[in-house]
Length: 191
Ligand SMILES: Cc1cc2nc3c(=O)[nH]c(=O)nc-3n(C[C@H](O)[C@H](O)[C@H](O)COP(=O)(O)O)c2cc1C
Image (cartoon, rainbow, N blue to C red; front, side, top):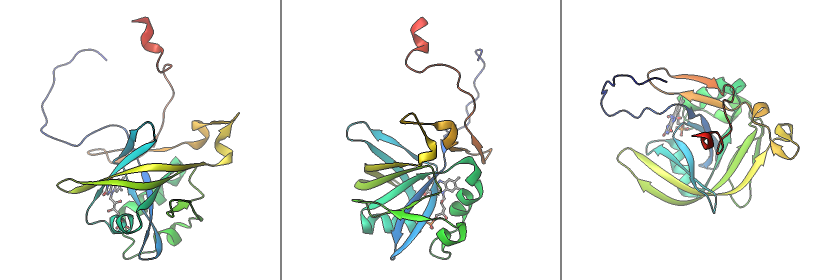
């Protein structure tokens, strides 16, 4: 990309691309899933992640009560389910039933996970940092489950997984990964 003049657009929480994760938790004894784009890996050893959840979310209650949750990575073909879990609340609708999810449970994390999602991370809450609107939930990843159909020669096949991508405001659309362009940790060696 060539150098261009910059236009200041104020403080925005724009970051492209984002994931569109399905966060699973037991809330009031029932499995519930909500969509979260503000999730990321947070630590290497032990593997940890963080997800920012608005305090008013029904899911937030279950995460705190149970001390565990799951992160389910959906495929681009699951855009309707991902969107539904992001516009309806588990306080009013049984989202898992409506989406037709097949649920399995982890150990030691007891959180519900979705069989139809190619990648599932079991998470144990480590710390919750209260920010002005959101709770930043920091967790240990205690187990990782990958659909057998997305493993090739013992390695994850991301093309098969086809993880859904979220393109935030002002676009507000779902997409998928494009083509690879260079090898990481080596493309920069020629500079
Ligand atoms: C694409 C997308 C991304 C979202 N990301 C987040 C997020 O990172 N954090 C959050 O608190 N809510 C996020 N939401 C909103 C919640 O998913 C939504 O309020 C949901 O209804 C909460 O479900 P619950 O009431 O069952 O917990 C997102 C919604 C969509 C559609």
